[in-house]
Image (cartoon, rainbow, N blue to C red; front, side, top):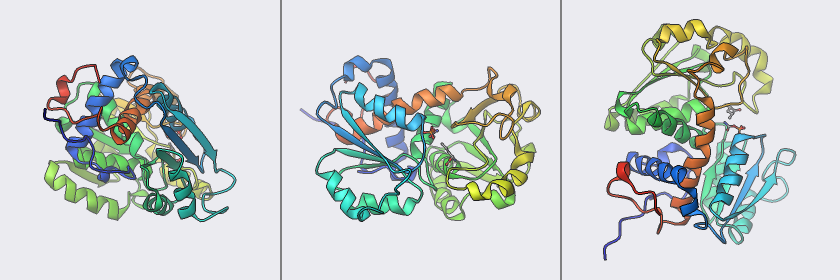
Length: 328
Ligand code: CP
Ligand code: NVA
């Protein structure tokens, strides 16, 4: 009997470039199967444990990881690090080595991406980035999965990012660079995405045929399939609030900007949103808004990821992901 290769070659998901285009496509296929038939996967993670270490607040990430893992039969422990950052009570490496003896996977939301890489290097179990200052890969996977569900072929997709070139923007850039399609990043010059992340993305884009363009010209929204924005002040950047608000106010997504994009344009946001700041209420609450689809899909793509990391026997690479069956 022949078996297909494992779905993922990576052990950790710290940023999107840990994944190949094929692996993302396979994760999306598995997400679709899970979403359609959770009962078939109900005990696939029985006796497995997830530890969640969070230095920052969360609604969507916390709930979708916790309840998602439980849906697959596993147990979860949440370690709140909002008032005592990871690495203050004991060295980060010791923390990782301890947890590796008890749990099967760790999800971390932290202030510094560098801490995440140190933790992952010392851990002998997979580590998932649940948001760092530089990346939010689970969000970007859910976002692209949501766009695929709308029926837009990725190679024809045009996503316009408007606002701050932040962690979510970085992960979307890396995802589109990997998969193909087009992303127009519209920010004030001082809020452009990291030059290093753009360089890495360019190398991937050469292979995938993706086009990533940065501009400060809002007219570049014309024809976009989706306009995506995020908070002007990310968690941990509160000291920059006045400066960023002043720079980003002209970049609010309102109905006039949606109109410039065209009637096909959807509205996207990772949430939490601030109505009246980065987006007007009439846009986020309009039929064009797919923000709650994005939020729901966080759970499905994260579950696909955890299944692929912990149960490669079940989450095998399929030969025809688009026509995968609903059984594990
Ligand atoms: N989008 C997102 O990560 O939401 P939370 O901060 O609520 O987890
Ligand atoms: N850029 C935001 C995303 C929140 C999900 C932040 O880091 O606070």
